[in-house]
Amino acid sequence: MEISQDHVFAVVDAIFKYFLKQNKVTSETAEYEHLSLKYITFMIKMLKNHTRANYELKVLSFLKTDFSSYFKLISSFISQNILDIL
Image (cartoon, rainbow, N blue to C red; front, top):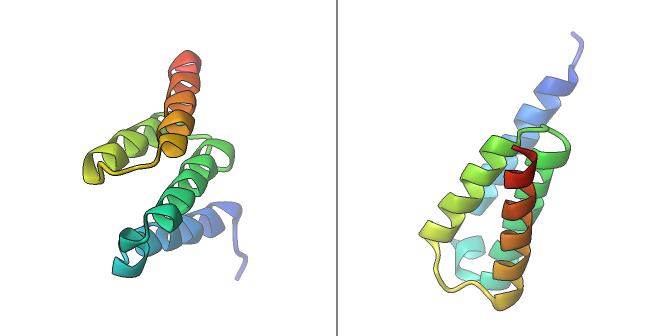
């Protein structure tokens, strides 16, 4: 059985989603922010799915409102870059 790159990306994507939903991660704002930015970056660089990355970034901003100014700045920059590409 050969493992394709798409299968690996699907597993990594599922792992990101799993950890982002864990109570320990969601209760730790800094850890949640860090993992969220890693997830968005993974979607952009590896999956090359800018539309989904932008959507997930918007969903994150609705799910949690107490993000740091650093996260808000970086996510705004990423979002603007995605919109420029689209």
